[in-house]
Image (cartoon, rainbow, N blue to C red; front, top):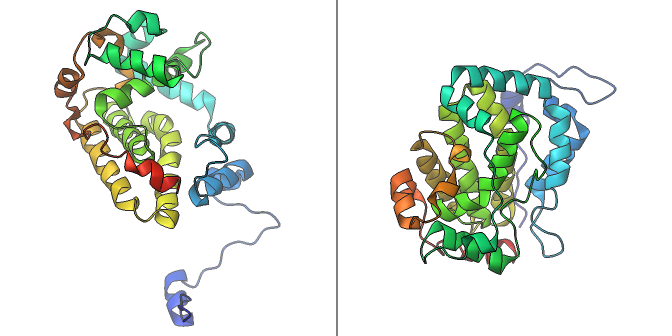
Length: 277
């Protein structure tokens, strides 16, 4: 049996109205994102593809980064950052301090069981991954420093929030950061910080809805948990110096920062198999 999905002519006309778009020899719109062939292509790929075993989940991230370079105005971003630095003394002090770290397995080996330091040690020693995995060069300006600290804190944020690195947990953490950024910074600067995550959130929702219906309710739960967690934060998570918390029990950290909305370990482990099925 065929399922009819086309709208009747009068129904389509009701939705489309009487106006017609302006014609052109090339695709052109009032959206800089739609006008960028690279951005348009990678967005479509990320939103429509299935997750497979042939390539890493992050395979398209370098392409997305290049596409972002076509649609973001770096001068405007730096102007917005300067305005926020002048407006927010706490943010200015954080930028001026330029604190960075370089975790090693040897550094965190003495940390007691259950502490953040012990969790970081296990991550480095057992997974083969590094905490400092992006923007490894010395930052040349405030924005490069911000990006570096976002990267350095990313895996630690998974550990302390309980928002695991599954396909759902990753998006939940992005949602948490999106809300924390939006509540702390001006709308314009928060938009610059959240743009990358916006693409990852929206394409993940599309991918789950199209290909992984079993995971879709959990992804929406991840949005809710991430929102609740992020809304409790007094400042962006990337501004927290987790290096000062290495000897603290993770449970105590979660209680202090209001991370109770993050689930218990293993809660979303089944998601990995669904997306790779």
